[in-house]
Image 1 (tube, helix red, strand yellow):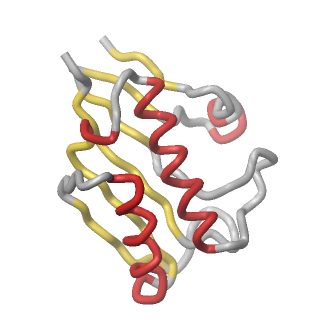
Image 2 (cartoon, one colour):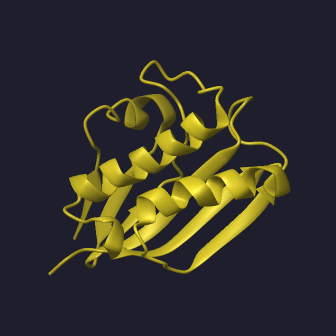
Image 3 (cartoon, one colour):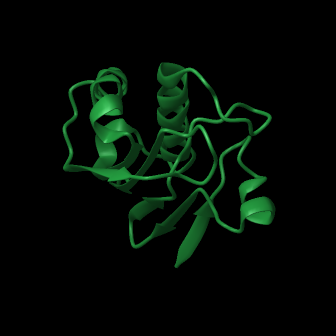
Length: 129
């Protein structure tokens, strides 16, 4: 049995973009890539604030599914300008991960879905029993 995870403030994703932020199946949470956009859907220009919002979105999905950061099993991040964004990404990531170190893959890409986006984060988590 599967169920969609749609945290408050992300309900627009299904009708507007055709995807759910998260899906629970077989005790696991699969998250769609999360971006750094403001509440109006605009790309956040400040790199640190953009990466922070992407992680806040990851947390919102985890919490809506009944999980937390320590339940993350795998993280994939996509970076425009990987070498330039990676140090800042790691600094922000470390604030959110609180010492939790799941497997992580960082992938450099030429662009993301909207101009100005520099990072997209997706993950898989195991739901607490």
